[in-house]
Length: 328
Image 1: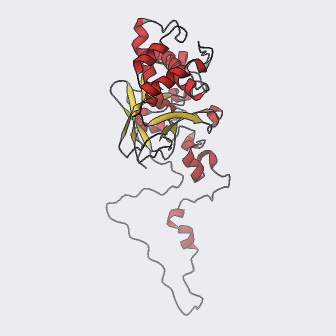
Image 2: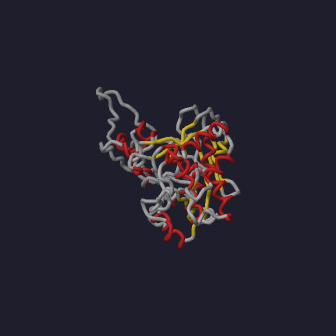
Image 3: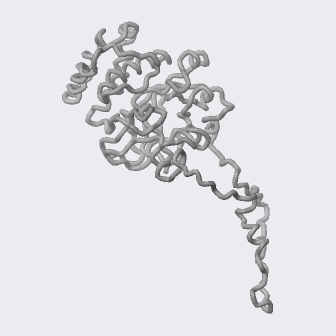
């Protein structure tokens, strides 16, 4: 699917399904998007009926109407694409979906009104949430300039280190929020989509989260507002108290050793100086530099880097890197 087509179809699907279910408008790729329907309550019966009878054919037959579908998408050539994407969102209402998109009033980037994905059933470690998927479309530099607007619709853009290009990431999985100690990770497929793999057991009611990257919310995620950062007083919740600055050799406590008195209060008793540990042969040790930046996996350094053109324009999530996040 072409990037612009994915944008238009995703905006349509979220307005017909997610916005109607939640009762408010969620993020859109088209910054000037307007619904064709007059009232969300007109579409609510379609969703309610689908929840009861689980018949996607009937539900899509109700959606496929000029009252709801823009003229440029109400064509035979787009019908299958529109149906498939609407079904991805309606998939959360299947009895075996195991998840539900729900309101979220936590994040300042969304002005405290957004969405999250919660589990509706038990998920065990290494399980795959198959219906929680996202669609991927590669962006050329020209398409980036035409489609993306900083801080407005760059919420679902990835940077692929393998393909070295920006990619749109849209679908139900795009509503998954970041957490520094996430319980899931993205698993890319070969069909232009990606699903979600469970990293540790999840109970009904738990939020499903994924790790976006170490620098997605500023350097070292200094502006991160995830639940884990709040519990650990990190990210945006870090206290302003200054931490003691470590000297170059503090790790080995050299300062303490040089100030150490090698005599006891009774000067007649001598105390031997501690022996300096012998260096092991053929072992090269790195100098201990507390301020040295931690090593990162290949590609992760691109996230939030001021030297990367893509990231200057977008808060790009690297799906390749996110799918390799360590299990916590």
